[in-house]
Image (cartoon, rainbow, N blue to C red):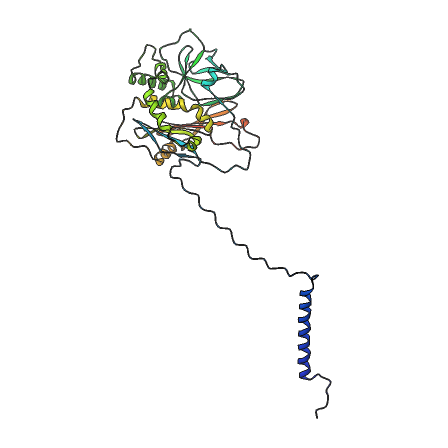
Length: 376
């Protein structure tokens, strides 16, 4: 018989371990059964990675980051391609002011704007008094009659409220300089595209030449070589047939698209001649009828080429790019706006931007209030 050593036997060790395991299990069961015991914290499921954003859809009719083209409207030699704004996300910072502006015809009709010869009686400058409490938007090429000779406005600009200033002008009546009156009235007409281009980018001699050539084409040659008769045709019914066709075509544009319209691309027998584009649909709508009449004034002198096709968006972008790449220079400034031009090889560009003091505090400058491209 083996003497005792004081160490537990193997069977005793196994029994002790078995009892210990049962005790641990009992304690675990007791903890689960105890309502006061803290509940185990579940391990959170991994958060799935966000799906990558869908790439923006390409707009084949876009001509810039903020403008796109609708289907063209063809009347004889004239193509009007409406420009609509592309919706953009709401800006995080304050946006620039988009004040309600008067246009020249409504301001002159209500006697809130007066235009007269200046004290020096110079051909290329007139005095404009804006007595209203709103800014007045003026287009280069707006026809004003009277004074010592009929004129057109010489620069796109914004005239601040309660302001008197000298505005650029060009004579469109080469053969008159008399003292019948110093005051002007609006002819409710806008010069055709080529004449507007001469006013924005060229000199007085170029304006006179374009007026003379237009009078010859339109059989409106007169003693003082004034543009007045051509301008009057925009409202005397001469262009009625064209206007009726255009009105019918524009009436078919969906209302949602009409609400986004900010301008037109104008083509003559498929060649881009003019691009007029505004930041504000509201301002565009005020000037749209006058713009359309000026487009027709140019088109009626151009025989239709039945084989011509409307320009593609790519052709419009190429036309604009020719002017966009040219050097820019400022040609006129008011307290409300700055007028700048670029002269490319085939086209010129004129822009009007709000001046810094016309912006909301801390706001970034918006896109141009108005952009105009004219073929040379």
